[in-house]
Length: 286
Image 1 (cartoon, rainbow, N blue to C red):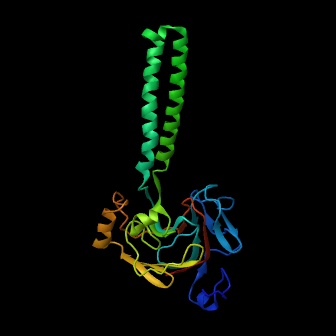
Image 2: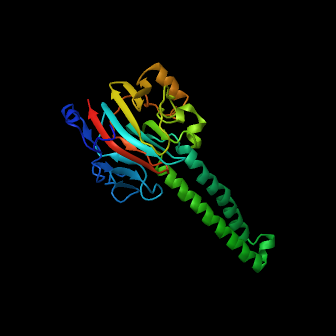
Image 3: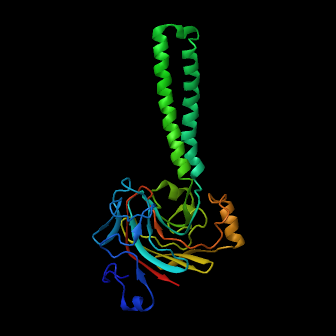
């Protein structure tokens, strides 16, 4: 796209070759949340010709196309806020969340650490064991046990929430981030902008600074996948290849058995708690 090109519109040449708009510039038509409900009213909004995540902590999280794709050429432009992190995910399928157990551990530990003392304290109190024979200490013991039980219940609720979210739409991610300041992007090349997240680091990258729009292109044709950034191919892989299998085994996806397989699914724009803006989102299915 050039500066003089109209935003969120297809040229006659693009229309003739099968390109389709995924964002009309004025609404969230065609986008849904994780519950497959219209995304209108969530954290995302159509503002000034941009698909904007202005309030990432409000409403539902990431948004998805209401259609599935299997072979396609996807192009879009984006800019990220300082220290921001986002991404575009594709080839999504309902799978075990790779980070699920990490989110399950804290509430589980909270429930155990406070729940067991609560039970023990209640037993001692009601059996009037030694010091609890005194009325004041008996009441204090009851209050302490109740407080511990409340904390344990909060932990149990957190465990339930984590358990309920142990499966989600998991796939490959084109990483978008402030490479200079965002901690995850700085932690590893495969976590930086245009990477196949946690799998393949980008090469020959020409990234514009934070505050400027960059153009992303993702091509999925058969088992071959390519990541492009600002007109340069920066990463590629082949589904089912030994190289990808080895990368998966060294990544957070190592326990997901079918990540190396071709699937059909929606395109996702990620809410990672950072402001991000998209425009000129268009796709050409093959």
